[in-house]
Length: 113
Image 1 (cartoon, rainbow, N blue to C red):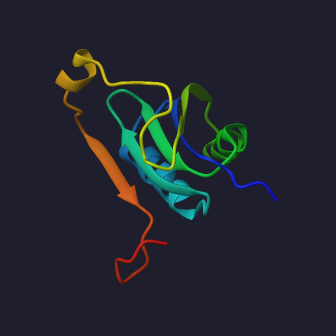
Image 2 (image 1 turned 30 degrees about the vertical axis):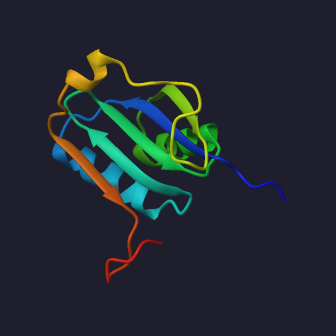
Protein backbone atom coordinates (compact mmCIF):
# COMPACT_ATOMS: atom_id res chain seq x y z
CA UNK A 1 0.00 0.00 0.00
CA UNK A 2 1.27 3.47 -0.89
CA UNK A 3 2.57 5.70 1.92
CA UNK A 4 0.92 9.13 1.73
CA UNK A 5 2.95 12.34 1.94
CA UNK A 6 2.34 14.96 4.58
CA UNK A 7 -0.01 17.62 3.23
CA UNK A 8 -1.03 21.03 4.54
CA UNK A 9 -4.37 22.31 3.31
CA UNK A 10 -5.97 25.72 3.83
CA UNK A 11 -9.77 25.93 3.66
CA UNK A 12 -12.32 28.71 3.99
CA UNK A 13 -15.33 27.97 6.20
CA UNK A 14 -17.83 30.53 7.46
CA UNK A 15 -17.34 30.52 11.26
CA UNK A 16 -19.99 32.84 12.71
CA UNK A 17 -19.77 32.13 16.42
CA UNK A 18 -17.73 30.39 19.09
CA UNK A 19 -20.05 27.39 18.89
CA UNK A 20 -19.09 26.86 15.25
CA UNK A 21 -15.39 27.03 16.18
CA UNK A 22 -15.86 24.51 18.98
CA UNK A 23 -17.80 22.16 16.71
CA UNK A 24 -15.13 22.38 13.99
CA UNK A 25 -12.35 21.82 16.54
CA UNK A 26 -14.11 18.72 17.89
CA UNK A 27 -14.58 17.36 14.34
CA UNK A 28 -10.90 17.93 13.48
CA UNK A 29 -9.68 16.29 16.72
CA UNK A 30 -11.76 13.18 15.98
CA UNK A 31 -10.24 12.76 12.48
CA UNK A 32 -7.33 10.34 12.87
CA UNK A 33 -5.56 11.32 9.64
CA UNK A 34 -5.11 14.97 10.75
CA UNK A 35 -1.98 15.55 12.84
CA UNK A 36 -2.28 19.31 13.49
CA UNK A 37 -4.78 22.07 12.77
CA UNK A 38 -5.00 25.84 12.97
CA UNK A 39 -8.29 27.78 13.15
CA UNK A 40 -8.23 31.48 12.26
CA UNK A 41 -11.68 32.73 13.24
CA UNK A 42 -11.29 36.33 12.04
CA UNK A 43 -10.22 35.30 8.51
CA UNK A 44 -12.60 32.28 8.41
CA UNK A 45 -9.69 30.02 7.53
CA UNK A 46 -8.73 26.56 8.72
CA UNK A 47 -5.34 24.95 8.10
CA UNK A 48 -4.88 21.21 8.58
CA UNK A 49 -1.74 19.08 8.29
CA UNK A 50 -1.42 15.32 8.07
CA UNK A 51 -1.59 12.32 5.77
CA UNK A 52 -4.97 12.54 4.06
CA UNK A 53 -6.77 13.03 0.78
CA UNK A 54 -7.85 16.71 0.65
CA UNK A 55 -11.23 16.08 -0.96
CA UNK A 56 -12.15 13.47 1.69
CA UNK A 57 -11.40 15.85 4.57
CA UNK A 58 -13.34 18.71 2.95
CA UNK A 59 -16.35 16.45 2.31
CA UNK A 60 -16.33 15.13 5.90
CA UNK A 61 -16.22 18.66 7.32
CA UNK A 62 -18.98 19.81 4.98
CA UNK A 63 -21.27 16.94 5.96
CA UNK A 64 -20.71 17.31 9.70
CA UNK A 65 -20.79 21.14 9.84
CA UNK A 66 -23.50 21.58 7.16
CA UNK A 67 -21.54 24.57 5.80
CA UNK A 68 -19.80 25.32 2.52
CA UNK A 69 -16.09 24.40 2.52
CA UNK A 70 -13.74 25.99 0.00
CA UNK A 71 -10.22 24.60 -0.50
CA UNK A 72 -7.86 27.56 -0.97
CA UNK A 73 -4.40 25.97 -1.01
CA UNK A 74 -2.73 22.56 -0.77
CA UNK A 75 0.99 22.13 -0.03
CA UNK A 76 3.00 18.91 -0.05
CA UNK A 77 5.77 18.66 2.51
CA UNK A 78 8.98 16.65 2.26
CA UNK A 79 10.16 14.45 5.12
CA UNK A 80 12.40 17.32 6.31
CA UNK A 81 9.25 19.36 7.26
CA UNK A 82 9.93 22.00 4.61
CA UNK A 83 7.38 22.96 1.95
CA UNK A 84 8.20 21.39 -1.40
CA UNK A 85 7.60 24.41 -3.58
CA UNK A 86 7.21 27.61 -1.54
CA UNK A 87 9.52 29.95 0.34
CA UNK A 88 8.13 32.44 2.88
CA UNK A 89 7.93 36.01 1.63
CA UNK A 90 8.56 39.15 3.65
CA UNK A 91 4.88 40.05 3.47
CA UNK A 92 3.83 36.74 5.09
CA UNK A 93 6.49 37.05 7.79
CA UNK A 94 5.29 40.53 8.84
CA UNK A 95 1.66 39.50 9.44
CA UNK A 96 0.72 38.41 12.95
CA UNK A 97 -2.20 36.00 13.30
CA UNK A 98 -5.08 37.13 15.49
CA UNK A 99 -7.44 34.90 17.45
CA UNK A 100 -5.73 31.65 16.46
CA UNK A 101 -6.43 28.21 17.88
CA UNK A 102 -3.76 25.56 17.25
CA UNK A 103 -3.59 22.07 18.63
CA UNK A 104 -1.66 18.91 17.93
CA UNK A 105 -3.20 15.52 18.48
CA UNK A 106 -2.18 14.25 21.92
CA UNK A 107 -3.55 11.73 24.35
CA UNK A 108 -4.57 12.48 27.95
CA UNK A 109 -0.96 12.31 29.18
CA UNK A 110 0.27 14.80 26.58
CA UNK A 111 2.06 12.34 24.31
CA UNK A 112 1.69 12.70 20.55
CA UNK A 113 -0.51 10.20 18.78
